[in-house]
Image (cartoon, rainbow over all chains, first blue to last red):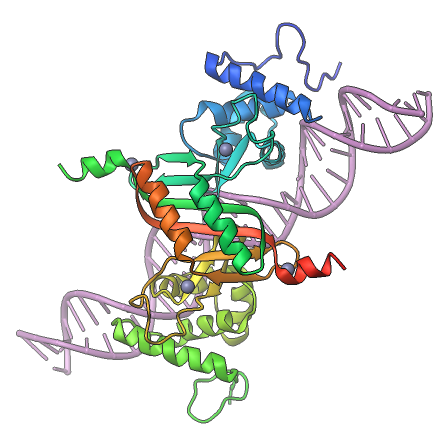
Amino acid sequence: MAAGQGSAAGEAPGQRELPADVRHALEAADARCTRAGAQLTALRRQVLALVLESDQPLGAYALLDKLKAQRPGAAPPTVYRALDFLLEQGLIHKVERLNAFVSCVEAGHDHARHGGHHHPHQFLICRDCGLTVEISDHAVSDAVAEAAAKAGFTAVHATVEIEGRCAGCTAAHQG
Amino acid sequence: MAAGQGSAAGEAPGQRELPADVRHALEAADARCTRAGAQLTALRRQVLALVLESDQPLGAYALLDKLKAQRPGAAPPTVYRALDFLLEQGLIHKVERLNAFVSCVEAGHDHARHGGHHHPHQFLICRDCGLTVEISDHAVSDAVAEAAAKAGFTAVHATVEIEGRCAGCTAAHQG
DNA sequence: TGCGGTAGTGTTACTGTATAACAGATTATT
DNA sequence: AATAATCTGTTATACAGTAACACTACCGCA
Ligand SMILES: [Zn+2]
Ligand SMILES: [Zn+2]
Ligand SMILES: [Zn+2]
Ligand SMILES: [Zn+2]
């Protein structure tokens, strides 16, 4: 028996116990994928869980290290392919400035207020503590679309990553 | 005589003939560096010339390949150090989505309408033809600053890279 | 006129990020 | 079963970026 990814009754070997909020997000993601005609396989689920668990952006190789604990044979393509899928489904985003990945804060909303795929978003990145926050500011995305139109461009996607100092670090450096 | 390739009167060996607009931009950059107490050395000048010559963003290793024609011993640090300098001086920008570098369209303005260093800017990138255009839209940078402030962040720098389709490609795909 | 400091470059080696290409396995679909 | 489509394993490689140290040129100065 060469069971590739048996995910039967009691769950596959190498499966860990996950926090309730992560489990819930995974279920929502699963439903969302099914609705989109895509499959959230065991591998993809594992990678998504790792991203969901982390409170900060994770690089592909950091992710790979963690994944190896559950899937010893994992190699770069293993994680990159899973990440590509999750990006396509809008379940995660990439932070270009950090070459790292975060779960989409809106993906948890099963009702998919953005139709299930991609949505305009921006990142705020603190240079001091690394805190990375996803926002979805309409004034920004409107201004971006308009600026593109002015130059004759049809905007499809905008990477907006704002670096600076978060409230906490600002306070800490003043006292 | 080990002349790299024919050079004019009093120029260094390995010097190539440059278009007038590039030569002019180099002179402006030189003046600007001098004013800032920095030196646009031969190496830095060569790298800047390569970026200026290109009509599209160039990756560091593409740049390295070109540089080797004039400077056979060149290695990654050679080009990265030059690029770091040029970035600091605001003479070039990095396009994060492409891991590539372009000359700043405003750096040619010797009067340095932004004080000589850095300035808020955005990129428009055509997915079809690769055309990359730098703009400096105040509505965008204002919206970005405001969005950051709303979340308690003090914005220092914003990467804004808008992907889509340029006017030319849009027209081509409709006829 | 020898010294010490700074800045720039050469050189080697390495870490980190991402993809190509091919092989095997799984799951519908017919 | 045959087929095609999709997913994963595996190896190898390309592309991006940095660390560390050696060497030179230049400047100010005892
Ligand atoms: Zn999101
Ligand atoms: Zn912070
Ligand atoms: Zn610029
Ligand atoms: Zn185009």
